[in-house]
Image (tube, rainbow, N blue to C red; front, side):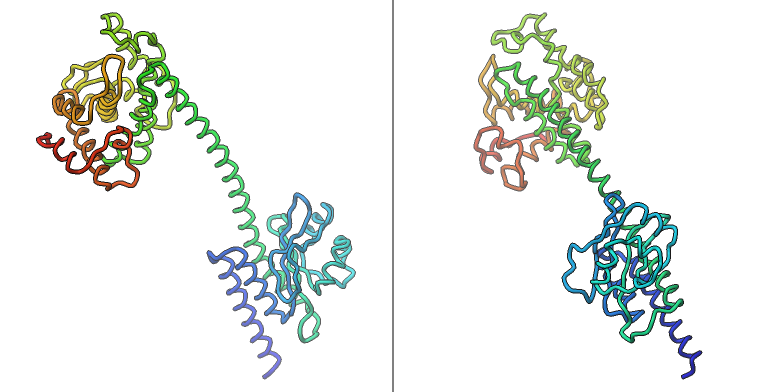
Length: 408
């Protein structure tokens, strides 16, 4: 075979290697695996027995090994250069012979002896957009032949391919760092936000000695019903928060009125019934990430027949979230002790719901509410919400008897 044929064959081989290298670098594989595969291709192209790839950290000027082949244990291996050296390397971006008198080699300082101990002969610095990202070092050829000008040019091209992969990975790592940093800040803010809301709920419930945990139960019941109705996760979270804050207006109501065991006077009724409007005024000034919270708070004492307060709204004029809370708020009030009466049993509470079906309570809400209870009793849900909080044992047979004749 002639020398021209050999040169052509080698050129085709190298072009094919470059194509494979480009394909490998742009593949969705693990970054470490991509770098290793790229190093193996470079070594195979030049028949080198040893090779190593370093990643450069601009902050501390340290090259840290990320892939190697043919070397003894080099985990944690690294070399350090100064900022002036990094700038000179970027300006004179080209592969260099470690045994040459090239000024770049002198800038490596003790790093030169370190690389020689590893068996390195040729270095190609990995640079993208005037940013030093790393270097690749390979040993002498198996054949003992010297590296030619063509070899240096080919190594430069292959180095650029690897540089782009390293650059993309570096950008991704920076983005991930920022993302994780911002995520941590967001989680902290979110935790503070929720802690503040729970603190408000605790402050509300603390005014009423008989209803400790009422806001949390209304919150949990509301979310369970909304989930049964097919609400989105975001809207469910909104009604959960609204449930915690639905009685926030009671902060402005005299504690003696809230805890009064005897019938309220007309003025006391008026003050107590003002709490939805006061709550609305407080919450409408807050920019919640969920929609409808102020109006759910304002309208959670409305009735579908228009006899509720404060706006005497009828059925579809009442936000669906407020209709849900109107039911679960009343249900929790019925099934817990109050200053003016002991708690009702589940049967008695359901009878009250029956009696006020389609007058105080919306059938569109009652049906999914009953459905949640039925599923919880039949153990068809993983995390039951309503039944465990009622402190009353319910079995399927008893539940069926209680629900007999319930409107559909």
